[in-house]
Amino acid sequence: MPPAPEAARPPAAPDDPVERAAIAAALARGATRGRLLEILLEVRDAKGGSGISEPGLRAVADRLGLFPSEAYEVATAFPAVNYATARPYATGERCGDLVCALLHGAGGTGVCRNRCDGERPQPAPRGFAAYRAAGGYAMAGRLMADPAAAAEVLGRIDAHQAVGRAGVGFPVAEKWRQVMAAEGTPVVIVNGDEGELAIFKDRFILENEPHGVIEAALVAARTVGADRVFLYVRDDYAPIHAILRRALEEVAAAGLAEGLALELRRSGGAFICGEETALIASLEGRPARPAERPPFPTARGYLGRPTLLHNVETFYRITAAWGGAPGAPAAALLHPETRLHSVSGRVRAPGPKPVRRLARLADLVEIAGGMAEGHALGGMVIGGSSGTLVTADDCRRPLAELLAAGLRLGTGGAIVLGAADDPRAVAARMAAYLARESCGQCGPCRVGTAKAAQALAGAGALDRPLLDDLATVMGEASLCALGRNAGRFLGRLSTLADPTP
Ligand SMILES: Cc1cc2nc3c(=O)[nH]c(=O)nc-3n(C[C@H](O)[C@H](O)[C@H](O)COP(=O)(O)O)c2cc1C
Ligand code: SF4
Image (cartoon, rainbow, N blue to C red; front, side, top):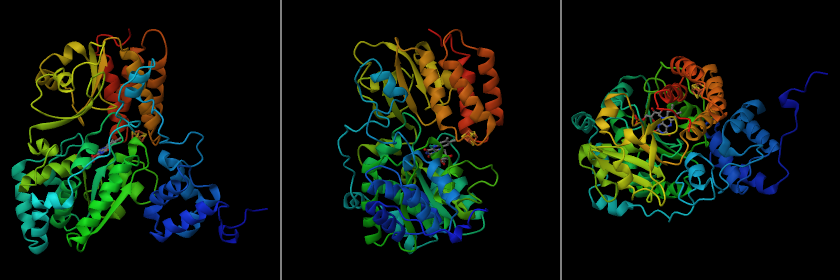
């Protein structure tokens, strides 16, 4: 017998009254496909962390006019949704990622500062009144009164030579002009996904200066003529969600959001959610999978509209172009030569460290309070989860030499290793992380990351020809930078003296 058509099925409804109420409430806040991920996260929260049930998912799909398979594809693509998982994400237990494993591996202690960092005090951001009193929102207000001031804003950003801080360093003003030249009403997105292992710089900014980021997003929106702004923030940054919700209410109450829809959205708990095209897909109610480029999001992004997307740090720093409202402790970032390093691992005081003109990587150790008790410097992982393993000797060389030889600082992450830490085990964990986070859409990355993880995890001599082969294929044929950077990471392993003990 052929299966019954969808329309002939009885309406789906979960047994659990809490879930039924949560679904109704989430749908009442907005029943659009674009809100699908957020609806699933809201239901998860109402259920105390466990994911939506299968009948619940079908009920949501029915209401949004989706096939159950479409809703299922989204629910299973985001770990944070906790749909049908035996081991829920964000349970508050130790995350087990690289830094966590280093510190806690043999029963040790220390602050991981990655996913399991619950012991930190509640953040105390600068509030709306204090930010405004220091000159904040003056440019946002001016643009509302005089839209022609947009040309001045662009000129100031040009003069400031602002570049993107998510890693690539693309000029900010050029991106804005591309968006302005494209057809359609633009959308602005603040990328606060920060899903990369051991990076916590955006968290530092949002915990201290939420209004600086929001003001920059408002100025960007008014300059490029957008009607909508999304703040897309990592799912497990719950204290920051509360800070931003309040900040957005204050901005709206002050009349600064007139004509603009401002919305906080949470990401889905996967590293790939931060890749711009994958992020946009998740905001459209689709799985977070990167798209081919061109077209670039500046021309065709969210729902086919021109989309201006920057990292949190980029937004915050451009307030300096029009004077901003500097306030400690983030004000150091308003100097163009300052870099925000996320320092973690075997140091006494891990954390976000704004540094001006870093001379040697080893200096980060002193800046982070020195090596942890009983450890000597054994090297660093620089740039994030698909970053570079740097030997202790190289850490002590002038940074300029390393940069000239091709080292990339990326998003500024620095995981400090001890002399007793096994670099091969570190590389194996990095590869396993990349294999887990690969979205699986293209072969070179899906297969390459898995093979690399397997090769590095095994005992015995490293199969360098295999790693070099994988590095070439992944570097050249991966669709997005996750696979390409993973290739670079593997390629650089061969230049290390020897990552085997
Ligand atoms: C796997 C992957 C993850 C990414 N995650 C983030 C992220 O969490 N935050 C971010 O701002 N950019 C992230 N990016 C970079 C974005 O695609 C995009 O280039 C960036 O947000 C642009 O910001 P910028 O103009 O401020 O540099 C990621 C890229 C890749 C390939
Ligand atoms: S390179 Fe990896 S993460 Fe990027 S699209 Fe391909 S499979 Fe997905």
